Length: 361
Image 1: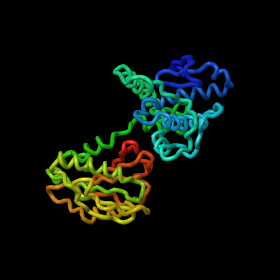
Image 2: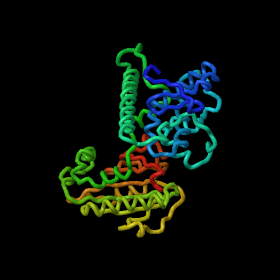
Image 3: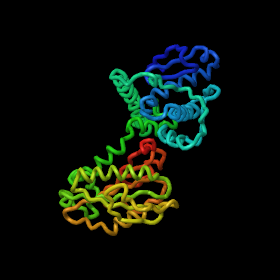
Image 4: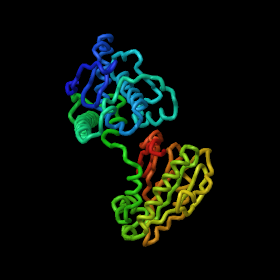
């Protein structure tokens, strides 16, 4: 609160923030008791500190606001004795989930369709001019620095490096939000191009940990790159997404002739490999039942000969709620996972890239 600029407004009925300043309707503020006023101010400060305005990007403002309210109100209830104002939204179903995760979940239902959110993005009616963009970058930099200091303090406390009298640290439940602030989401298309578009030599550092399994550096300094792509067909991945995903892969293959690609589809059984050069060539998908990642990686393990002159990587498109193999694959793995999919920490290997369902339409 010491770093927050607080201003009175009659434009809004309750309170709001543009990420830089906090605005209160004085009549609304006077209608609350002391505890509710404290909760409301903390509510807005948390929206600012957790970058809920700038992290929204092109998402639906109303649904995003509700998701952000669920996050900050849960933090208030878990860490203070403040009483939330009447009508404040809470939902323990989403405890310890990021605002991105909650947003994706809310897109799929109308549970809070008529709910009025306290936070409002004041830039909705404005313009995306250079000054506004500069303000956004300044806001992000400011709060990221503060959050990093808080995180570092928490790490010191946990290690008890300077004794038990050290104060500070992360409030209960903030870990997931801090993770998303310090490691922002990545455009999945850009990540895919960078991943598949790498030359085999670019994987040198990544693969050093596999040397003990017989993958030698001499085999990496080559021209051929073989990519195995598997799509989860258990019902959690739409055909529209698969079409767009295949289109991106095809664009990569046309740009990088040295890349060869095999396609697979899997629920609890594996289908493939298929040679696909356009979305129209995708075979009839079979699935809709339970899913296991094991068949795909077992196939790769069995057929991975690591010949000199070639290098292999794999990509899995899924929500992540499935059975993982008990072994670590020999080659690099990229998981393209929906924002409301399995927690990143639950993936025992590979690189996890989050994708938003809104980019699939």
